[in-house]
Image 1 (tube, each protein chain N blue to C red):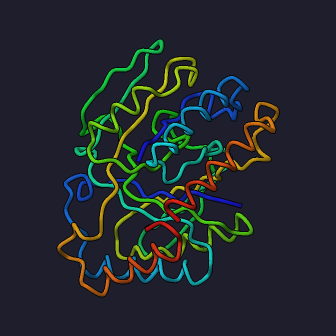
Image 2 (tube, chains in turn brown, yellow; image 1 turned 180 degrees about the vertical axis):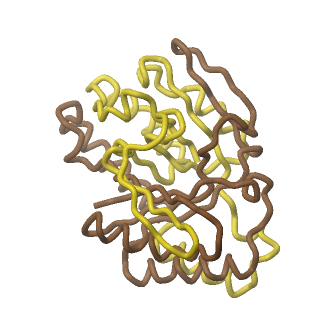
Length: 142
Length: 137
């Protein structure tokens, strides 16, 4: 089962203030444990929304809005993609994320759609093309 | 990172039509052909998700659904590009079938460990090993 685990932004991440050495160290050691357990597929931090943009489609027409996005309270600041055997397992891993102290943090866990979840719209042709893309990506970037 | 924000349909677990799957697959194939696509996935509704809340040293688990759809994400892809402007041009070509022509796509830059002056050589090295192990160099 594949899950995306997301940490939300805070004023520090939105200001692109680098995490302390202690925090980076603790996080990289945690990521190491995920790697050793064979559950980590990917992990990334995202910079401030000031470095980004929104493309908003209305009736098929795109409008581009530069960041920062002050109206969104729930921006993503970092995420992991984990491959685990159960919902319980991903929760246990997330409980071990090294956020200590008095700060209140919420980490969101969402299950990733995999081929079998997609219903009839996901035809055999689509599945083959998805598999072909995954293979090409692995070959080029894996 | 390209983030497809959620809406009422994605939160309801409405699956893409064959037409939308075809359009998204074609779009993604172009990104793969251009060599810029690194990863991507759709997320199941928050009703099937959970949150872990960290507060005062304690952890508690809260089941979904959460929040308003527009505060959540429904899918993402990670692409390699030289500039924000380049990504904006790619996203402007997002299939209009998505969200029946009404979708919000957020573009965010992925941080490089090297840009943190607080990262020691040991931390940078650990990160490099992680990327090599996960095939995400």
